Length: 228
Image (cartoon, rainbow, N blue to C red; front, side, top):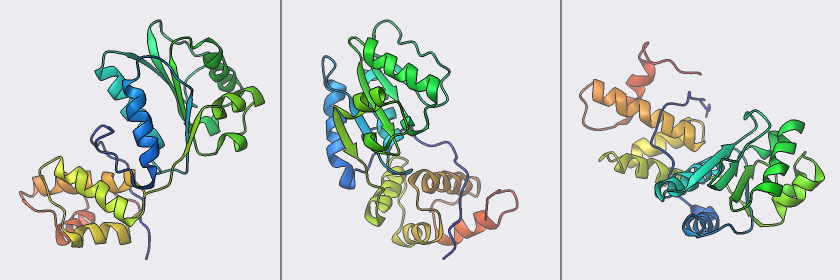
């Protein structure tokens, strides 16, 4: 079956409540507890392939800390160096550690040295031992809590789609879920992007139900750009 990549569309903000854990439940529970912690603990590092939920969990943690009135600083491989931790920040997030260049590696190491009361949580596609970064940074990324995240299987992907639909008061039938899982790229962000498009298309067409025929009509609509 041909896999069809889809453009990413706006979707609900990532949170702990709309993360379907599956095999990643230990990481989810640890970050939930971390969000409630009064002070910094050992650093946390999440690793896994694209689509395993790393960035979702980082954003969920940031959102929860902000909701509680804390300050959060976010950095990744595109953030210009040097990195400055704002006064009063209680959480520092570093995403895409596998892609940090020399200047950003130095900036990340400086966070570990001078973070003070800020909790550091980082993520990348590779385990710490395999990261192409300077040794002192690799050591610090790996000395705390390390969680290997697994991409969602069919059950988890179906759960992601149904949970996303339920937050909008919609129900996805088994036939729609099966069609999505067997014909499109099996990455949560792409599947949710397709769901967002289908939801908007159904609204424009005044259709109260999301169905396979409606999805096929959407994809055949010349006004709906897609990659094939």
